[in-house]
Length: 340
Image (cartoon, rainbow, N blue to C red):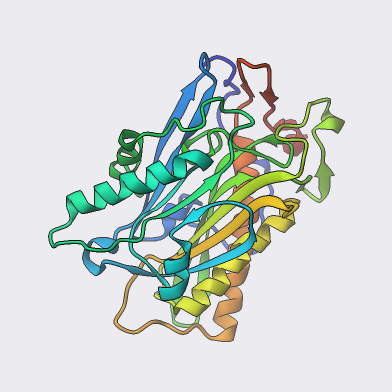
């Protein structure tokens, strides 16, 4: 993959910096949440100028329970989030969550319906596939590169291991805050009153704005680099939050809101042309939902805010520079910004 190399991915914590006071899980990724799997299909073709893919988040509990508690929040709706209305109405997630590129969202939804029907042991008469998307057309010349086979590969390859970040899955063609970006993930161990819990996030970072990191604003122009992404205020970002507490739908909706609002910490502009969406889900199902106390809810909010901030920075650090056949270049954030 010529034009993509930059050595090993760097994570924020390897620079000696941390975000917040809570400790991360063993992987510092959304897969630290028990029962949450991630699979990704990455599509790169330098000759054709294809930089896209699909990321799948699969709650294991769906196999037996059929649905898990979930909450949805929209900050700016210039985008597509397939399945949002039923998700909001019922506060339940019936399928895995897919993240892909704009015009591949509908094909991905159809592919997931086929995948779920093929695994069903009883007749299915209704299903609400959930698919988020970002516009990667500044880099990717092919608008609908994701096929059913790519979606199935991501779903069937989902596992509880480390999450590939940067130019991976649904973040392969993403640019954020003037640099090449993509998939980022992080987690926190939260000391709740009823015992420790795990909060994990996965961010599909593609938003406009100016990067704020390590206490300063970092502009590509000041580093001698051309800004990646559209010059007009356009961009999208999807934040998925998972936790191992079976919360109420209303509390999950509030948690999802913090996931999107956290993007402001790193400089997201939340512009008119951006689709900024948050989804929070409980990877654990119980007969009765847990109503978090105000004190516990505040801890979860903090864990989400800190995790999203770190996940975006990790997405930028993991990303690799992309040079398209059409002459566009999305520069990766130089590691020297944080190592110097």
